[in-house]
Length: 209
Image (cartoon, rainbow, N blue to C red; front, side, top):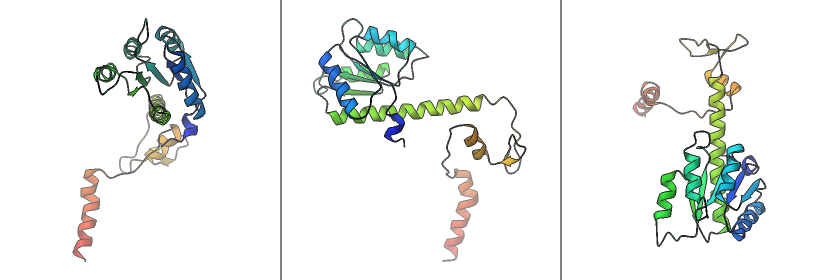
């Protein structure tokens, strides 16, 4: 789990044609430690900026003149270079009266949805959750790129599965990958190994009770 220091400097764009709403969101996020924000009064202006400098998170008001939040969302999700940007839709529509904005937002690719009026805590927690997920995605993507960039054939032992590393010594697979990427491992037991190694031990313990 990432702590706040890992995500507080990530770039956030906010688009809303209501200046009061923009100032409110900026104030709430600034007070919570997020300083890397850019505000836009129209979807079109934001689209122009996103093309040249993609952010880590977008907050989009649905009802904007010209290019609505839906228009921006659909445009981004159709662009292969931008489609991974997480987007939270914001609207004044009450979900108690109409679920259509919620359904359409998710159908077009939004990751989350906030209804106005929202509490400060709700806004901050949803932003934190989105940025943590995006941080993880970026690190996994970087790790995958580093692994793909290994241009040599890695000798691996047929028996113990250790890899012969650059310094001509044999190393565990997870150790080698951890040194060459940002990947971290958590250990578990696959069903086959459970049946072969763990279950016999448990059965033996039961028999000797």
